[in-house]
Image (cartoon, rainbow, N blue to C red):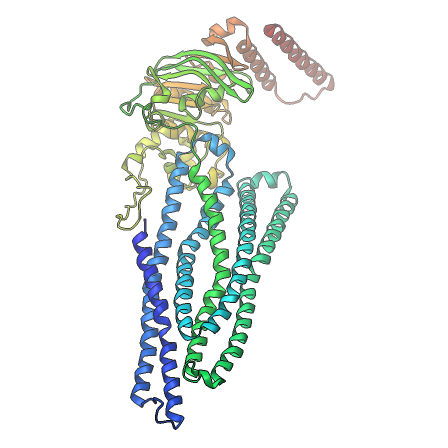
Length: 638
């Protein structure tokens, strides 16, 4: 997207390299002129003061011209590389937004961050300094060798004899640099991931008092990075020294052979002192490019290795996506009428859901429960298309969810997970996170930043009344009023400044404020007390009119408010009905209710009694109750 900038800039490099050789031509004319003026031979051309002044002006003019050209070149190419860096970062970040849950289940946060920082910087260096240095070296060699051949083919052959050795060694070392740079970057990603996990889990680390173990593991990872970087330096460092050594040998040979050519009377007119000085000066101009060959080789190899790692992000594709020809773009509004038709989900050889047939009319308050690992969360993820079923069809308003555009589907469904994620922002902005996106202008991807208008900054300004009402319905309003800044209170990273129950209620408010057609709560009331749970459920009842609410929970006190309750066991629907119907059925739900009632009764008895015999009798009764419940469960399963 920056061909024009690169093309003009690289042409300027070629012209500047040619102009850079002019000073040595003027020096040659001056030296030969001075020599001719002092040798007392009237047949030899001399030099006047005016000519010397013109030659001096020519040297200054060439230097100014070359410097000006290089300045414009840098402004073109270096700016283009920075713009490309922005575009790549923008497009990769935009592409990462399209990837689905299975990708992020496998990806490491630290690795993604390292690719968007360290790897992208290496690519930018390759596209900026590396790009123009390649042309600088190539054009410098081409123009310099053309001049040197015109001066002395014998001396030029000496220089050419050294080049194959340099090229051969560089080719070998370039392969080693590429491999070792990739290994170093991979270790950098591991270190970034380790640091990110420790910063996020600092409370857990301190709670278990394992700081020393974490420091030891981090130290070991850094020592491995040090080892890999030293291995890289061992092949990257000698490049410049090796090139300098060969150039020194070449200069020694040129001085020896060139001196003989000048002293030889037969070459007195064909190879002068001025020509020798021009030859050496031109070769000196190649010293920097030759020294840079090694360094640029490393820059290019590191850049290519990093670009391959960035390409892996570009090439990643979501398992769930809109498919042209299948997606019906005319679907925009959804009511929330759900149905599962013989739906099965398989992970490898394990069947998570098996032949689920379930109808959930719009406006239904559905409760889902079952043992851990029975497939409750997977059932909710099928609705949001976090995954697609292995077989069967999930329908929403009669449409196969696979034909509904993902944007329309996600606009219609709000999910509150058991472990909500909150942003380092105000409580108000966290609650209103998903309701102001219509006001944001679309960010163009895959286009050049050159000429694009600056996107306006659109700060979040949520409707206070709407946010406060959502907080009230989620049972959060009283807590927020006790905060010093109210809804303007800034939260720590991932909302760590709130309690677990407050985080869950904030996530519930964030879902309620969107007024979705389908609201899914995936065990999202587990961290709140019974009284707060009652307030939240009353709020859900208030907003559930005309909306489909799916409540995944283990507490019977939570589920009893549902219009209908479904029990999942080993991926199958084993019970379905209202609270009273399931109690009368005497299955898993009835047992769950009895166990929780028993636990509640025991809790209400208070603390430990002072009489040891009473304590022993209570413990025996508790054990007997648990044993009876387990026996009943076994009979139900049979």
